[in-house]
Image (cartoon, rainbow, N blue to C red; front, side):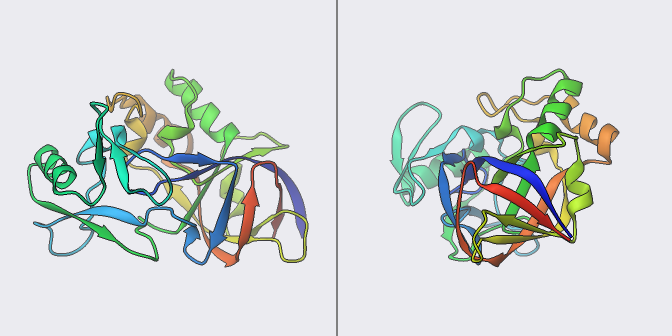
Length: 235
C-alpha cells in the first residue's frame, strides 16, 4: 500500500556530533545516511567501552560550536573565533569544558546514537513546543529530514515504523526504511542559542507520547534528496 505523506521541508547535516547543524537544500543519501553527517566526534579518553562519544548531554556548550561546511576544516567557537577542527587548541578547549581528556575521531560510516537517519514532522515539533510553552525550533530536535505532511497530525511517525519512505517520483528514488521510534534524551531541553535547559521540553514529550518524537531509519536505496521532494509511504 502506498500513501502520499507530503514533502520534505528541511534537510540538516551535523558534521561534528553534538555541534550545530548545517541546513541544506539538497543532500546525497548514501548507505550511511546523509553525506557528511556526523562523521566527526570527540571521544572521551577516560571511557573504555559502551558509548565513548562526547555529546551535549555532558557538555551542553557543544551546541554553540558551528562547523564551517559539511566537510569542515574549521569550527566557529562560542566566542566567535575560528579554530581548525583538528587543532590542539580546539581539542584542549573541548577537554577543558568536559573536565577530562578528549580526542577528535573521524569515521567514514558515521557516529550515530541509533540509526543513520532521523525523520520528524513539523506537526510533531510544533505540538511539543506549543505544549511546552516554547517557540518552534527545529534545532532542538536535531533531525536529518523534516516533513510537512498533508495530515499534519502530531506523532504520525509512530504509525510509519516498518514502512519505507520514498523520496521523489522516479524509479530510482531514494528510500529509507523506518526501523524505530525516536526515543528522546535531555538534549531536547537545550536551547540551541544559549545551551540553557528547559526541562519542560522532555517532560512534555514523555506526557504526550511516552518520550517518543520522530523516527529512525536506514537507507534502502541511495540518491539525492531535495527540499520540496514528494514523500510516499510504502507499507
